[in-house]
Image (tube, rainbow, N blue to C red; front, side, top):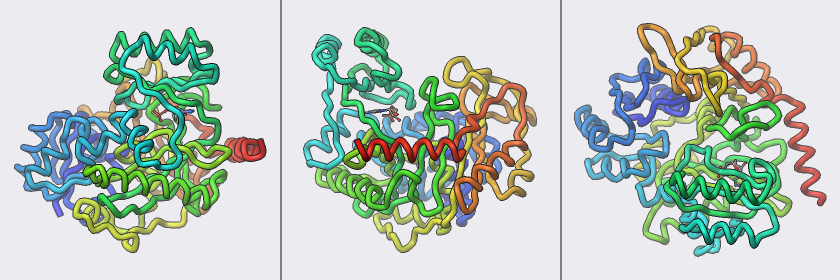
Length: 441
Ligand code: AMP
């Protein structure tokens, strides 16, 4: 089948790789010249993923039958709607269904309306003054979220990023003055617990879960520093996590199923990958947010161990015939660490050469996926964003972490940074202890 991959990051390299391995002929549109995707693709075009008309024209010109969406930005501008109108089936939601991600107030409101469990206290504001008043009137810590897309970097938590009410008010002013995330804000209760990600495949009605993953958003070791797009992630061989029981996973899956049913009831069926970010709290999992696509890096964890045909899975999603019997993952653990430019999260050092010995990484039984790098004159050059995702795969998280570190020795460059603590035993122990404390409060 001729399949178009939309996007040029690590997630999309993993998508293109899984499609190619399962017999698809891959085409790609991306804004950077991702060397991994370019190599896998029969043909590609360097354009912005949000240039809807150009993407549709390209898809038509290559007679692609199906398109798989990588990032969120094309969803928001209706690329799926336009491709479907042109007869291309899509793995990714329509603009209206993507509101689960593109509007944080929509996601919370739909959960409230349909009494989906796992929701939290929240209030949405389109005006600065009311938002300020809400902060002044509340004594407990709140989380400040611009209502629209911010590339995962707009959320600030009182007690962490915002130390006083004055800091929170200052941030509200910034959001409204600079129209961060489109202006408008959601203020919500601050949850305490351990975070995990549950991604599912969904064809509008049927929901099939993938292994749980834990992402690391903070830029520096020890979970400090600014929020980033994600520095790395890991998954466990039994597809749970060291601090999430199967019962808690089932609760989270139930929440996702109820949300998908709510979307169908609203006349807005959800097709694609749905990503639930959860906080495992004292009373069970609660929703932090939904994303309308694979996570990046989480896509690299799960697609690296998908043992069934990804092309068939995508066919099922886009054709409304997804079946759990056709989706299987290896019982392996994975640890993914992103190589990023030094200063990523604040002032990244862009435009430097990076060398990746892909064959040596494969010899270690690991995988590497190029992200926001570009190939220029035979050299691979970094941008201000993440450069290469390296995935270790083994029987336990500990062994996968060691494999990932071995593989990382085959990546070199003069201004690169990696969060080496991701997946290390002491970090996992801390998370398990934290969860035990929360359960006994
Ligand atoms: P988001 O972009 O919504 O995933 O938020 C980014 C990060 O902010 C999350 O990964 C959490 O660490 C944190 N966060 C978001 N919402 C909450 C909340 N209600 N309580 C505590 N932390 C949160």
